[in-house]
Length: 293
Image 1 (cartoon, rainbow, N blue to C red):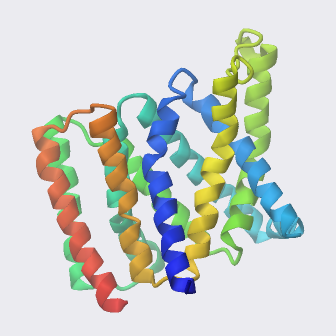
Image 2 (tube, rainbow, N blue to C red):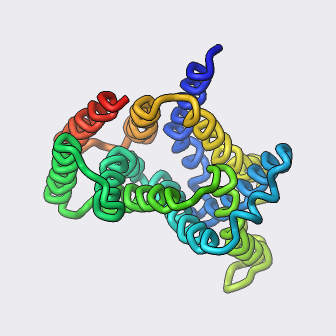
């Protein structure tokens, strides 16, 4: 099998896992989102550490955390952990549809950030796509009476995360390992506090260890986080950028399907107008990727 074909299947599998991950986090609805995030952070560190140790690359994490990179990785860690928390909270609180909207508009937010921060040139087609998406968000805000804050937060933090990572000359697995390493002390302190009853918590109030099912689900969050990322980084080196950009839309499409079909979240008349507008914006943006590709 050619490398491009293997890369495509790796990309497809990663996006399917991301798109269906809401089903997994819904099973942890009884566990507070912050506690789920803490477990996701620690178990991701275990998973990534094991992968790097197998390849003799653990030393690369220490090298990545030196000098200017340390501050950049700390900021990117805050961005990605905020994004993870927002998604978990959305799924557990009946806002999975809004979360999918955030990942739909993320590519267009990334284009806007590139223009504003990186002074990148924007083509007319890209400008039109951003304007249509912005109009859709404004229409949705007017219709439901409030901005889709969670969608904007998810798109903004993920866009900022990508922008920050552009300044790092570190591989994706090493950089994410460094990020969860920086977050691990906070995550561990939270979980120990729940277990031992610190800061007003009742002793033994943590979910881990309460039953086998919940404990295994929490531990598996490391694989669920790390596995798709490794597949994605494998694919990124083997497929064209146009393919990489287009297949990623499978993620929010599956998220949307899960929200409507599995979680029975309603699509309002405002969503029925705003979503096609965003899809149109993405179609225009995708055409520019295809033409470049």
